[in-house]
Structures are given as structure tokens and as C-alpha cells.
Image (cartoon, rainbow, N blue to C red):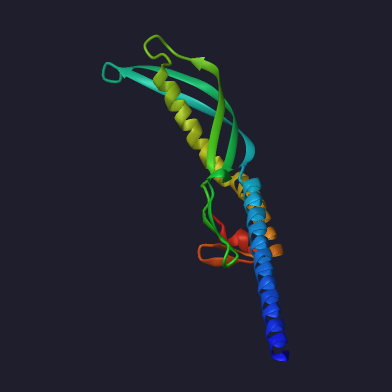
Length: 206
């Protein structure tokens, strides 16, 4: 009789332990699912268009000559050109590619989109001089527009606009880093674990 009681108690205990284990496993899985959903939501919040704006101005003198009769006759056209341009440097983080490894609690950034630079120049002509034999044409305006954008591109490279845009990008991505650190997850990029914002700033240079 005592033996049956002991065996019965052992069976009941085993059932209770099995139930507790299943309950613990269920709660653990629920925690992982909750964490994953929270991280995905944060990435969605970060996944937006990050835009940095700048304004540039320049003055250009455009000249062109047409020569005739073995260069004995020439007809010149010229103009003073004032350019005011609005420039934007944007990162579309909707295009960012990443992987979430629930088992190893790791987020891997696979790809960060390159910056998109948009130049919108307002070109004004002053002191225009031309002749009927050498008037301003559409080809002149195309050359001027191309030259203006080339000069502006050089100014942008020498300015802090790209750096400011990248700093804003890092600021957005650091939100993912803060969340992963607070939840005991890891953030990886280029095969390296990112542990601080300074490392993020260093390793995510594009």
C-alpha cells in the first residue's frame, strides 16, 4: 500500500513538474516573441526618410564666341548668372536590409542605403549680351545647368552637409542599438558587434 502511495505521489510530482516546465517554456517563448515584435516595431519607427537640407549660392560669368571668315569676325555672347540652390541629402531607411536572429538574440544590419543628393538650382540671368549671329540657345542653357550642378556638387563635398546628414543617420540607427542593449540583444554590422554609439559612428561610415 505504501509503495503504491509513493509511486502515485511520484507520478503526480512528475506531472506537476512537466506542467511547470511546459508553462515556463511557453512563457519563455512568449518573451522572445514579445522582444522580437518590439524590435521590429522600433526598426519600423526608424525606417523613414532622413533628410538634411542646405542652401548654396554662386555667381558665374558665361561667355561664348562664334568666329567667322578665318577668325577675322567674332560674335560674343555672355551673361552674368546668379544661382541659388536648395540641396537635400537623404537616406531612405525604408530600404535598409536587416536580419533578426531570435535564437541568438542578434540583429544584423545587412545593408544601409546610400545617400540621395538632390540639387534644385534657381538660375537667374543678368547683363545678357548676344547677337543675331550668336544668340543664346537651348544648348547654352543645358551647358550652364550642367556646369552649375557640377560646381554645386564640389561645394557640397567641401561643406558639412554630408557629414550632418550622416550624423542624423547615426542618430536614427542608435535607437536600435539602445533598444538591443536594454533587452540583452546584440547589434551586428559587417561581421562586428556594435556595442556603443561611437562604434556605430565609426563602423557605419558609408
